[in-house]
Image (cartoon, rainbow, N blue to C red; front, top):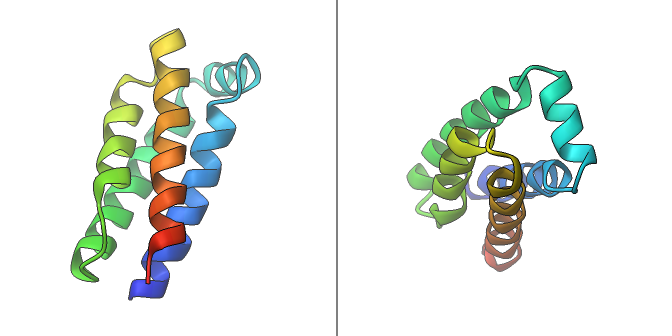
Length: 96
C-alpha cells in the first residue's frame, strides 16, 4: 500500500503543477466548468485515505483538498496549486 501512496502523490503532484501553470491551467479549469477541481478533490480524498492507512505523510493531500475547495479564486488558486504540487512531490520523493 505504501508504493500505491507514493505513485498517487507523484500523479497528484504532477496534476497540481499543471493546474498551477499561469493562464493555461486556469483557462482549462474554467473552460471545463471547474470539473478538474472536483476530480482533484476526489483524488486527494482517496489518496489521503490510502496514505493514512499506509502510515505515510498526509500533509500534501490535506493541502490538495483545501486547494480544490478554494481553487476557483483566480490568483489564490494558482498559488495554492503550485504549493500543493511542491508538497506532494517532496513527500513522494522522501517516501520510503
